[in-house]
Image (cartoon, rainbow, N blue to C red; front, side):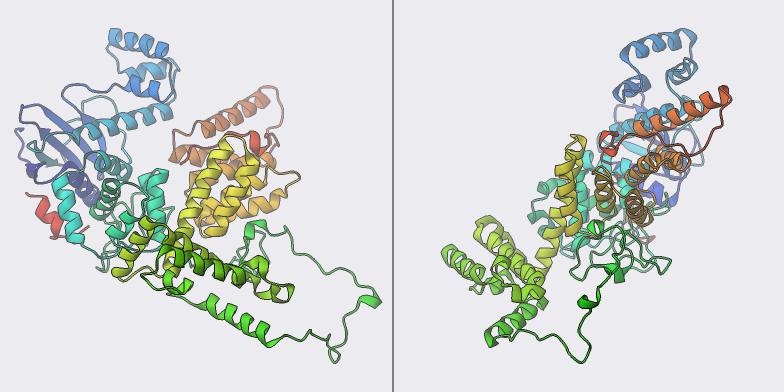
Length: 595
C-alpha cells in the first residue's frame, strides 16, 4: 500500500474501523492509518495522541465552506465569493475566510473539526474487504491541507458505530457479554459522548438499576437495534464494569470527566463549612420529608417573638395528647411497616395471585385505594401521610403495570430472570419520569413558557435529586420569577457546578446569572470556559464579543473599565444553550487487531 512497512495491517472485515479508532485512542497512537479499497482507491487518517487529527479521502466528498454554511457561520453568498478568491489565488479556503474577516480562528477550528469527523464517518461505510495498514509515527498527511485539528474521539466513535456498526462483530461482542447485568463504570466519561436525549435516557436507566440487555430492551426506551448498538459501543470502549481491577474506560484521560456516574441513593457531600448553605448541601438542613431542597425558604426562619401569654407550658406540665384508638394505632403501625418493605412484587403489593385476571387486579386496587389514598387519611395521621403516599404510589404503579397486558408480560419475563421487585421498578420508573420531565422543561423554556417549565423542572428534581442539570435548571427558572433571591439561586447553581464542573449548560446558567447580578468579570470566565469546550455555542461567543466591545469603547472614551457592571436581561428573555455529550492487553482486542 506504500513503500514504508506498516506496523500493523489487516482488513475491515476482521477489524472494523470503530475498533481501530478505539485501539488508537486506548494506546494514544500517533501515526497514519491508510485504507485501500478493492478498487485501488486509498484514504488516510492521521492520529495525534490517539485522536484523528487529519483525514484525506481520494475523491473529495465534503468541503469546509459547505460545513460552515450548515453551521450558519457564513452565508451562501460569502461561500461562493471567498471560494472563487481561494481558487484564483490557490489558497486554502479557510485562510481566505480568515483574511476576509468572515470567520474567526475558533469558528474555523470548529468547522475543520466537523469536516474531519464527517470524513472519518464516511470511511465507516467502506466495504469490509477494504485493507488497512497502520504506520506508527509517520505522518503521510503532513503536507495535506492546513494545520490539523483533533476530533472529539469518543463522540466520533459513537457516531460511527451508531450508523455503521458491523453486524457480525456486534452480535459476537453482545453474545460474549451474555446475560450479565450492564453496570456503568464509575469513571465512565459519559458526557464526552455527547449523547442525544434518547440515548441519555438509556444511560439514566442503567445508572438507576444495572440490568441485562434483554431487560433494558424490554423497557421500550428505543428500538431494539438502537439499544444494542449503544450497549455494543459501551462495551468496546470499556465504559462498563468488567470486574478486572485497574481496567479503566477508554477516554477517561481524554479530558476531565464531568459525569462520574452516581448511584441514585448516594447523598451529596457535606459543605466545606458548618454554616447552613441555601443550596441544601447540609444534610441537617434538609426537610425531614425529603422534600426538594431547591424549593425551601431562602434563609432559616428565626423563632417569632413570643408574648408572655404564648410561652409553652413548663416541662412538668406537658400538653395532653388525644387518645388514639386501637384501630388507628394499628393502621399507623401498618403504614410504617409497609413503607419500610422492600423487594415485594407487584402481585404482593396488591395482594393478588400471579395468575389473577384483570378484573380481580382492578378490584383489589380499588379496595386498597379506599383505605390507602392519602386524601382519605384523617388529620390524626398527618405525621405518617408522607409514608402512606409512598405506599399508595407503589400500589398505583403495580395497578398500571399489571392492568396493561404488554407491560405485564414484560414484567413477568423480568421476574422469571430473578428481577422485578417493586422497589427496583419504582426506582427505574422515577429516573425515566425525571428525565422526561427535564426534557419537557427544556422545551418549554425555549418556548418562553417559564411557568410550565418551572413545574416540570420541580417534578424532575423531586423524582431524581442527584442530577446537577436538574438542580441548575430549576434554580435558573426560579430566577425568572417575581422578586427572586438571586444569592440563593446562585448558591444552588454553584452546588450544581461543584457536582459537574465541566457541564457547559450549568456554566451558561451561572454566567447569565452572574451577569444579571453585575458580576461581569466572573461571568465572562464562564462564557470563555463554555466556548473553549463547545466552540459551537454562539450565545456564549456573543456574550464575549459584547463584553470586549464595551471594554474597548470605555477605553476609547477614557472611562474606567470595571470588571463588574450590571447589564443583563431577565432570564426569561435570555438565549438558552443548545440541549447539550480495554479489554486487558492480549484479550479480545489483541485478537481483533491482527499484526
